Length: 448
Image (cartoon, rainbow, N blue to C red; front, side, top):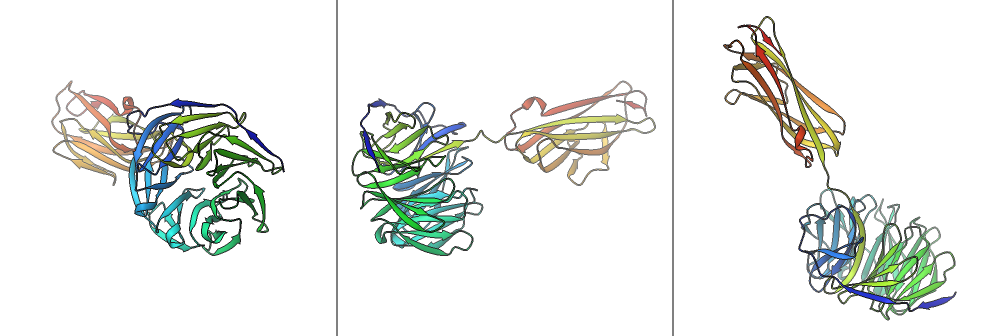
């Protein structure tokens, strides 16, 4: 095994935080858990600018992003909670978990969140649909947690008994595998075939073959505490808190390159495309490593005590363009109009909780043939219809009959349908209203 040290040039740029935003726009972001000021910093990966700082629970020690980018989770050690940040609104909710949670991980399908609870030797399992919490006993002082990309297993690095606990997610049964001394970090390869632990007491990384549970070892820098695997599985990046270096393991050869970051690494995360590596330095900064050249830059003043880092892609806000239309048909033999109101979802999201209102002319005396989803208000002469949900590209028609009272020849009779409410947000107000107009020809004849 060959080991190389790259000192390189470390460029430092001081970046100040922008005012807090109501939402996080779509794009790739770096999230740091700042243990000393109980916050999460949001860094735009395209500019390396800190664009927001969000208050969370007490002493956040771990941070994770949901696979769809809609939520960020922190493990808050001093108040035994998980903070849940909704990236669409940056609102924060809290969920109580086990004693002294030090790390958090999300299942590949986003349905479960796991915390490593050091002081009660357990993993809390949060059902993200209901926020209910279950507990699973694991090894002694679990300090880190990771989920296999195939979702079949959860792994904890148990610092005080030099082991990894393996939870079968189908049965919640637990097995143990002995690894190196003082394991403080754990990560899984993209194909779920390898599990890596950062062994702080041995300056090594243990490599578990998940097919056989056999363990091998690779020497790295001093005091490794956190690690991450590149998206293609070709590299493992190790944060060595005992020096100022990040070790880079070539998984094909197990050779190691060490990159001097100029700071004290505490945790590490890789961008979704594998092009950059982000290192939480524990003081007030994040180091950014170019994965192609191993050059290092520094984002200063991200927050106090960034001890954990995660990267994720925030999606565009959910939208559904709900359009309405209306058609009125007159009668040759009676004082009435047949009305058909249409509600259409143009996407891009599924539309829910849709309310549409059709305003009928003042000459309307009564309405019949009303669908079950609609109600008639005789005072306002309005028909209100509710649509629970519409898939993209689908529509619903509501047909009813408006009976008319005394008519004046030449009188225009307008029928207007409007979108009143819908969810999620509607991006186009231009199609929220439609009108059709009829003309009174005789006392009985209405032409539309």
